[in-house]
Image 1 (tube, one colour):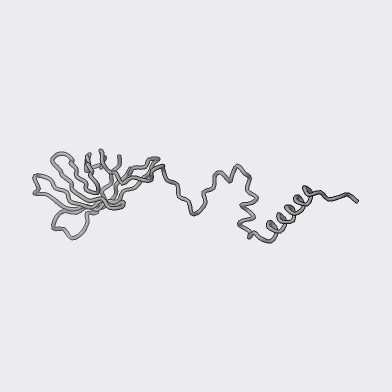
Image 2 (image 1 turned 30 degrees about the vertical axis):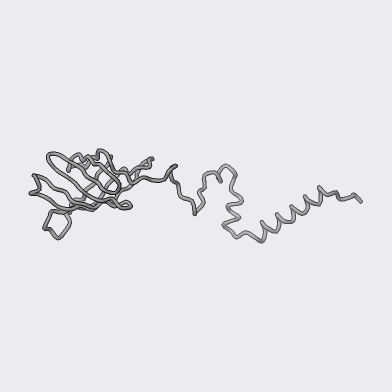
Length: 153
């Protein structure tokens, strides 16, 4: 009879633990993950992890925005306060909280004015908002305009 060495004992003990874990301790989903080739494991993101750029996402909307039929809007931002201009003589003032930009707009020296409510979104690889979408209305109107405001930079 062959003598069992300490290396052999460790190997046998490890083998017995593996049989118990793979046979009894895993539910069907864990068994499927255990069978996943190593190269595919690198592609999986654990459910409690979110993809985020170094430094996190920024709430910075400063810059030039193309707002389609509404024209080009240039925004400046200091903290959560946002101001801006658009052609021919439009002005914007608002507040950015989380991903929502709410404020007022005016044209023609203030004789035409109203409010807006926009949501920022990031739709390409960057840490800054790339899109503004939302609604607007003229002063004195109850309902929002049916044409949404959509801008991108």
